[in-house]
Length: 390
Image (cartoon, rainbow, N blue to C red; front, side):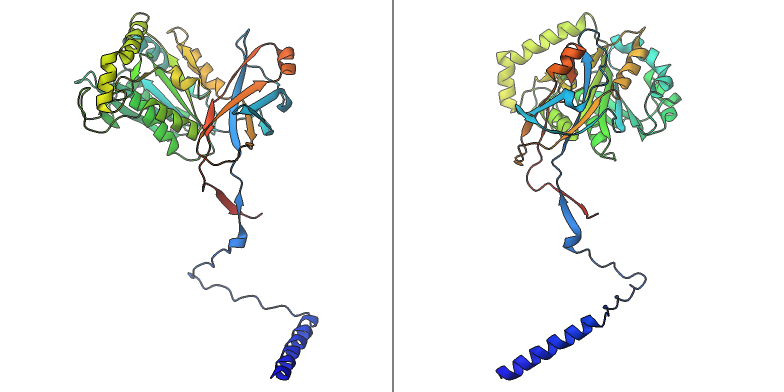
């Protein structure tokens, strides 16, 4: 038996050797029939790509003049994550295309003159967006029957057609003559409109675009937490989103928030003072404890603008058009960075990011201010992307 086995093995070996020496190659498989399913890709054809690259942009302005400081190089910057310096692997003065939502708050007498001026020059303003940018227009106003409830209109879904965005229907809506039915109505707080704008951004491709919300508002303190179908002292229904949860969504999606505000010189500071006192009042805390959430939480526009790398500009009727144009232009004159964090633990936690200009560059350029997002949430374990080998 052993001799037979050895002889068989020898014959097989000799046959394979002769086949290889003949120079023949195996015949290719027959072509697939029309309509036949494509063969499955082998796992060897796929690689897991390191998706840990952190991308962010920053705007650098002179503290003396307030103007953008251009001409800086990669070596002029330092990036820190949770206090630890990171190596900058990607750097550019070019910025990717934008997906931007114009969120217009029509509620408030202080904004009336500003919006009238902007509405008459809207098409001109929108031409400052770049050709590859896409934009949408949303409107929020109080319900005419219930003054403490609010409606949201989606005047235009995302489009690259800037003339369409500034058409007569948009102008009429800005002047208080909106003919479209609301996207959402009877909302208990204007704050919900920011959330709806964020959802619209997150659901709109491409994901590679930078994301921004530009709002025009009177900046009255906005209540954030309310039951959507009940009053202040009721305890049932779906609650509106908390400001910390909305901020987390913005950080995760990379959304920048900017606001052109026209505060009422009398009522805005008064209401802000009353709102702060009310939230801290013992009775308010008892009510919030009973309801299970902070029923007196509020947010100003600066709460979202500064942490996301955006800005707030105080608007005046005479300069409103130029100020909105300036805000759009500020979205482009920025530096873009990328780095792979030294802390690779996928814990889903918040990472604080600081971008600094080096002391050498600052001694050359003078004192500067860097505006960028405060950080990001590291993706939890199991999040990865795949692509085919090149």
